[in-house]
Length: 386
Ligand code: G3I
Image 1 (cartoon, rainbow, N blue to C red):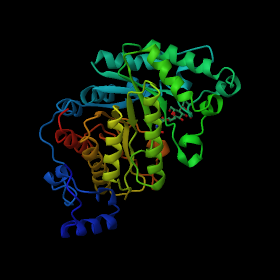
Image 2: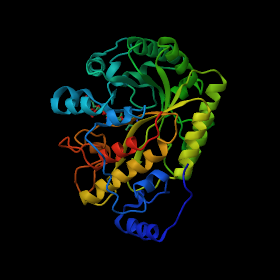
Image 3: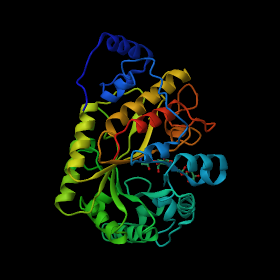
Image 4: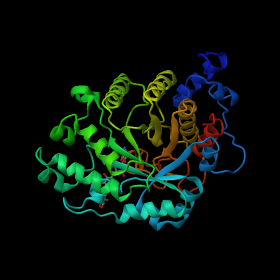
């Protein structure tokens, strides 16, 4: 489907301009759809979309789900933000409220208050609800270190999964059962990331978690959620290879993994490699797995201060990524990590040195649609129908 690389004179000029202005992320391999938009070859790419339909409507027209991460403090205190979630999103995922520190105040206590509030918000407004996450090396509560050891780790994990997954059984679309387990840079066997779970239970911890989740809710889609799978450094290729091996191994052992979550925290200043990305998606789909884009946003701290340039680059990164990803029929959903620049983890973790507010999401801090929104809308409008 994709055309081969075509280095036109116009493209050469544009690549030069992109390098000079720091908008190199837009300089990516051309696809048929980009060309319909006079896309990558055209510095005037305007991301024009027809009509006012929301992202969830445009996605649904192609058999896709669009949603976003929401957090309790923001959503429960800001009715305007809540209204924008209802308007744009067909699915929400709690940004933090299902993680251990929030839901597991003590070894024997569970607190579903905030997560339930978000689940009820989703169901009241006809949105799907998804779960993030059950087993991760990060976000473990303070009591974990002193309480959990190699003797009781399996029991602690099983109790957590049984209770939390059981609580939402039948009412949840999907679960990130294991999160970010691969990090070849650590030189552990199988490219596994260092984690207390790996330390306490060995590499089997992943299979144990998936079996427990399937038992607690046979209907939820069970996802392995991976980070840095879309980037194009040598270590990212190793990560893709190790992730494929992990998924292949799970499938061959009958471990109930049903989808890959690809986080897609894109970096505004970095190029993607469409060929590698496409090949990886194809290999994942070949295993019979669905694919969800689970945490998409575009970090803009290294981009120029000028807001127009920044918004164009962010929008370009969204569209370039989605134009490859949405061509893969196994992709069923796209979620951004937040909806508005008002609430983004990059306010803390990706702040700009010049102090200018970050702009990584589809809506600006005033909740208005910006060029990034157009890029998502454009990508959904031009995606093949599922
Ligand atoms: O809730 C406490 C609050 O009580 C306390 O006063 C405050 C003091 O620091 O901390 C608050 O918790 C913070 C929490 O966000 C809620 O704001 C944690 O310190 C902070 O570490 C936590 O950061 C979250 C991070 O995951 C770690 O859990 C980010 O909001 C969240 O966006 C981020 O999301 C992750 C995904 O889960 C996995 N993939 C990468 C993604 C981005 O890092």
